[in-house]
Length: 388
Ligand SMILES: *Cc1c(COP(=O)(O)O)cnc(C)c1O
Image (tube, rainbow, N blue to C red; front, side, top):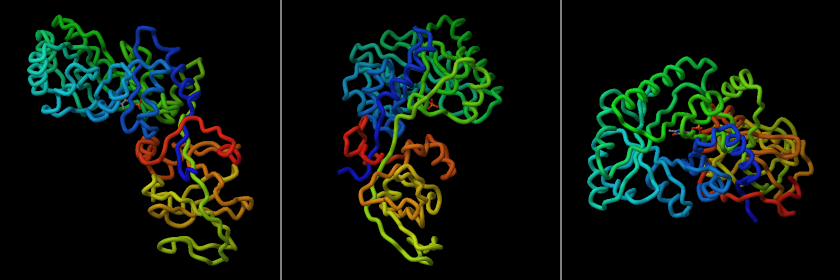
């Protein structure tokens, strides 16, 4: 019997992908990033499922992630969004991986490998438009693009940029400034007679809010997993759009009660004696702690769901254990299902709610779900659904 597991909802995944595919121009490719262990959902589960659902490209951060995707033989292009060390660049030659390049040093190395093996290597240049993270701009960009175009074994397949300030605001002035900057770069490239088949800029928020930024590909992360990038994005879209859009979270996280016990009034709970009962209290112990992804900032904060009711966390979150108050859920029994993230009867706990408890964003909550939690699709055995 699993004591802690992540459930993945395949119908939700298909719903989310359809929501995007329906609104994209047929010539616009849909890339879903599966970096950070597929936003905590599990790379090995999610990468093939996205491809099955009609996603054409996958995005990863590192060479190691790209190699893990490649080992699954999905036959889709894989865009590596982070830097690849020069001595590792030879690994991508002759594969479906596309490196993101921001400097001439990497191009020189790639050119050498590509020429040696006489294999054409497609490249995506990252354009700096104001996020001031990865990217290059101005004459340096044009010169590098020219160099790639002039090389017989290098192909400038794409140029892309990334917006800094869509999710955090309903004022999109800065995003529009970045968009105009990117358009200017595109004009400069065209003027220099440099042909780039794929221009792309939009992550989830821009994909939903600014159809003009779709161009040849969108890179839809968080919303492919069924979450809004932010409240601001949700509000902006409701404000502008006639077409309602629904997203369904794919991930739930569950555990089981490992002990039920009664303690008297005035009893301390957990390390540091930070909680003291005010009445005779029934506690349920859960076999998950901060090692297992329950942020220690949730100590004495937040709740879980048992029998569709809220059970508040009492005392400090331990390394592998957490205590919750089930005094008002008297039917609680050993090995009952506990929902940490997801829905049970009429109650839900979203990653956004967890994030607000922890003072962070839902991206971080998901991305930090430990790799050791088993991930499984659509758990529907009678045993699992008995009490959910
Ligand atoms: C992660 C990432 C995305 C996806 O962002 P979401 O907000 O999750 O849609 C898009 N583009 C780049 C370059 C990224 O690194």
